[in-house]
Image (cartoon, rainbow, N blue to C red):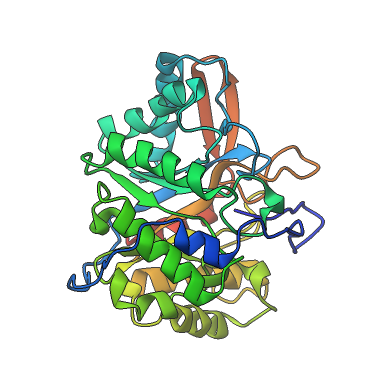
Length: 350
């Protein structure tokens, strides 16, 4: 997630960014290579029943990423124990996938050696893990801040987890600082450069805030990959339920069968009834529409967030599915909104 919000606002504000890397530099520093030729992926993606586990305060950071519930002083064993406690509660909802953030200030550090406990605990229990790169600071304008560091980071990650069939790679979260053509070139060259990443376990984000898959879908260089799609009510003006459904389906293009809705969410702390098909609340209409499109197309998704994210005056992200409690390695998650939980499960096909 990329934006700020609290209980008093239905909009989220993005920090203005400065472009640090020109499109030309981004393309010339990445080895070129043909990545087309693979047959288009076509299997349904509803095997991804997931949640985002985020930093409290969001994942844009110029330092190491420490997701909520962990401490940078935690050992690998402590991270594993904490993660397993939280995964137990997520699994009770039907979760089998977790989307975790990485950045260049995390991978390759001492903290990375310990943070990996959250990845390894998930895969050991059969969860899928989506590792997604968040740009290194909210003021970097939706672009890769340091291309060399980005490639070094991904080389470490793919060399470590390239052979683990439960680990998936998302080269960049919400590449909104690039034109469609530039982003697709950056992503295509990533596939060529990081050959340890099997294309079928790579999620290429849509253009903008990963909110439009049509150009990526129609680019044959990504035929063998999965696609990452984001959709929030606050991206757009208020719509009816039917208008939301039509809008979402249009933005998916012809690639719903290989798309994962890696971010979608709405308030879970205000008592909204997501079971109400006649609701006039825009958030309710939106979540019902997203989950219906997911179910219709047998699409998977990772709700934003399980915990972490932008804290409002309450101290937590009002979109968070779970209330977090406990201490040490005795951590617990409690569902904030049963109707929201049930609607997310409905979208997964449960």
